[in-house]
Length: 141
Image (cartoon, rainbow, N blue to C red; front, side, top):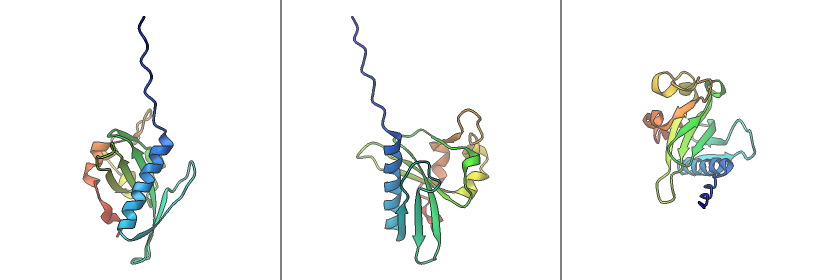
């Protein structure tokens, strides 16, 4: 009699999302931005980041994955005035990766970046399409 392999326990998506938000908040704080995480489900803004130097307050949406994959995101859900930070957490001991894109760039994206944002079945962005935006923290002027 063959014993069934135990199913691999799926990681809680909420935990992944929260981890990504904390990592992004840390990066913003290192860049001298006052940062506040908004807690709760189904929120439109994940982080407020304020620059005392410029007086600008940024609204940030964080999308997190545990490993390199596909970030679910519909073009119709993109807010042009927000900054999107896509986070790949990776395994412990492997550096976290960040891809920072302005909402206006995402909303009007074509070619590789925008290729699947309008997909009717599973809209989103593959992590490779985000590579030109890796560590693009300068959007927080």
